Length: 486
RNA sequence: CGGGCUGUAGCGCAGUUUGGUAGCGCGCCUCGUUCGGGACGAGGAGGUCGGAGGUUCAAAUCCUCUCAGCCCGACCA
Image (tube, rainbow, N blue to C red):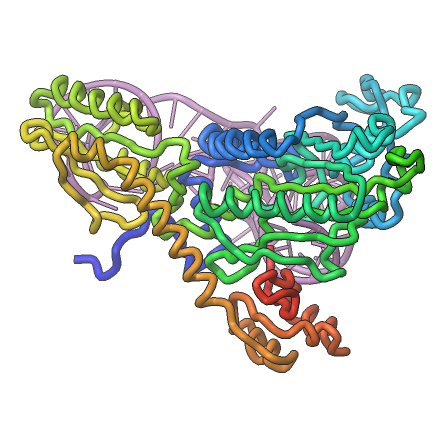
């Protein structure tokens, strides 16, 4: 008898959280590091999650009146340098394109950029597209009738990061970037809050993720923004993760790119612009918020596969069992459920563990017993083997969506409960030190905003590797959340 | 970009001190028995030892240079 249940992932979360994270990604076959420095290769199962996220959120943006478009991946260096704070924020992590041709290296057997093919105008690989979109907006907007202008692109961006981790921080990452222009501050602020609410809806209803919605402190703002709104989430190791942001850019970019419009009364005015995004980082958040010591647990509504049907074959009427499985899969598909029979030539236990590590929300086991009795046996991934249930086939098919919904609701409830339990109240910088010192305390600490003005604040937070996450809306900006963060 | 460590089969490692022509575990392929929470046996495929130069009869091993990755900091979605 083993004293301790064997886990599919080694080490466990408690033993070594960062290593556990890497192993979950490998075990679920989500992504791997690539030959390109700091960049990841997203594998089919991982990309399928992103595709599902894109599919849902893209529709919502279109309903809101956002139009998709595509801007160049290469941005003239001169564009980036126009907005002072923006340059300062991004210049140090930009990859630069300087040549347009390769030639054989005379000193070796490789290739080199041809010296005579050096570009007059250098380009940066976009770290974000405020500048090149701002340039376009200046030409596209002329009258108040052109406003608001709502643009978005799904693309990847490149930031030359010193330290990378798959999904959480990679050189290249995938996202959508929305860039909107309004006539006035009210329009821009309303946009930021509206999109932030869309994010929250998306996170809670599809990803089973929740955090704290709020405003960034000035030092955590996006470079070039007057205000940054965000949702800050909490991972199972207690660290914070910025899940999304919306930025009120005021007229900062309008001034530098000349984004003006003619008002109704014939005057001229600057646009107020916004930008907002969430990224493939959310896949990392799903792992770190939902995963357990057996690996990934996919939130049902974005799970690439929601139900796996495992035929339990023993060489006796295998064809009949397979047919029974296929019928169940077909019935589930009719209800819009992503279900699939695992027909691979593997041993049944191996298929089970594969489904567990990939986090498929619902596992259905069908053998001779089930077929004879017209029933199915199913197990919820989030609850494990204890949840094994046998039910009449028709009853199961009819209730499957309900089971998936229940899994979603339970996952969200667990995330919220974890967040609440690990959010501690404090009153002073002393409380912050007492909680986080000596690496003992984890989670978030919520303190009155006055603590930000404590003269020792910067030194203490730096010393303890703490950052301000946001000033949550729930406290009307009177408190600030402090935590270690990814 | 500073400090530390590591590059040997798909993955994880031994071998390096004391040079002698490459090995183990897992995975993979074949066959058989297995298959409802990680099977076992037998056979088999797979490596210019990160790269370049040097010393030597002989280099994974010694020397020089270089590249890449990881961890810890500073910076970031």
